[in-house]
Image (cartoon, rainbow, N blue to C red; front, side):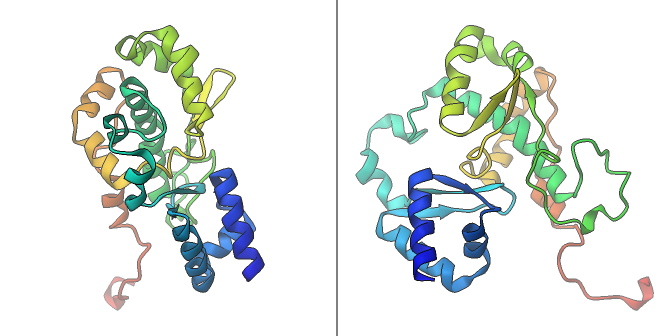
Length: 237
């Protein structure tokens, strides 16, 4: 175990993120002793593992008490510690809302992008998916047309802002489409962001641009799904 946990620690620090399908990542998620050792090693370097069971990757991030020693108390780091300015943060939140909110709803209801929820009566029994079957791509042209004028201009969004988000690992750009990057779902806290989007100002912005958002937090839907152990009622058999 010593060599494996040392190797995983080094790989996480070197690469910043790894897929959940990785052999050692899977072990860290199911082996308690292995995970404790990994957490201790990361903590010794001022880091912590970012793990979201609905995300396709895990990542490392600074521990909260290391934020100020590393980045200082400068104002620009209040919103972003990866050098994003205000417009870039806004674009990131828009993309997160258009990709991750619908994705999470599909995940907790065990639906797929091409499924309207009526083709699989046993869908609730499926394991949570993390791939393109639940994470839909966005048209880059449509995104720029809808939000470019409000974020510094279409050319700036296309030529600079999207490229920066791709380099940081939040998105991937392929043939005019924007796909979820390894950090999009793991670096932004869904439980905090979802409520602010669904019940906040951004919901109106998205609606005006023709992008409806879910009516409720997906985790509220998940609470009533048959995923948890419940007492069996013979009268309902």
